[in-house]
Image (cartoon, rainbow, N blue to C red; front, side, top):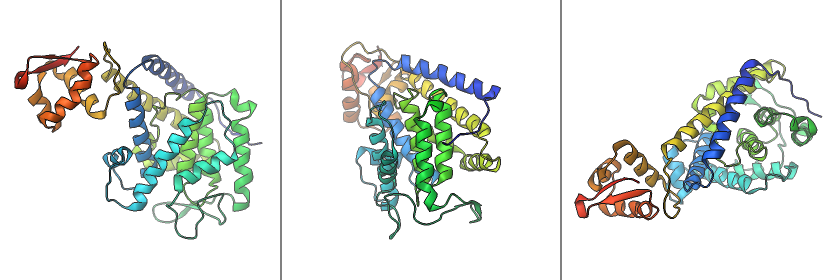
Length: 340
């Protein structure tokens, strides 16, 4: 049975405690809110963008958001497919029942969803690797040689058994997620897509352990924001004979920073709806923030600030008015809007 090595340092304990406190705040704030689905859609796009960008995908976040809406970009087919695959994979993960165990077949399916149609000819997108692989730096120098292909299956099954075992049940979800992330990316069981699979599986752990049950944690943005640090911290743990202490401190810090940003966004959108509920679009979120910052504004101001036509402003405002989120005063071009 796999047994991870790490110590609970004062820093790690403080970060885990802070993350837990913010998570409780978010769970309480997000109860019965109309804008939660919009936040979840945004999280899915941010995850797809950052996780694929770590592996070199050139698409920007607006590009990814457009693909998520079903728009056509005309970009590299491989780049688009990687993003769409990630969106599909995360929908599959989020749709699973939290109490459902995650077995070897699930891991293989997760990987298959992530890499479908993106691997070079002759490289299978199903099952474990059949040839040795390696991790190289920017200069092409090998910095890590993963276990041999024959070990990919047994080591992956060993990790999954640890995740579902008694020892991990006594650990905080952040620790289990961090251990899972590092162990799978170090086993490197697939021909390609190992990083994406490891990060997705780590998020699944947070979800099933109740830490991201709302699906609002775009953790991969933290890793993507400083890719050299991300790779160096993974390798540092390997160089320390797989002592994961510093790696887990790094992961916990990323979760705290991600939760803080999520909390700030919730605070910026905290408007009580008096009428019917409305699922906010990104443009409607922009309008609510604009009203919050400016107070009472006229339609032409919204048009100029957001680059919209008068008709489009009317379409955006109508659901907000019906839900009681926004009040309208006056008519025609003299109409002003303010938060209720």
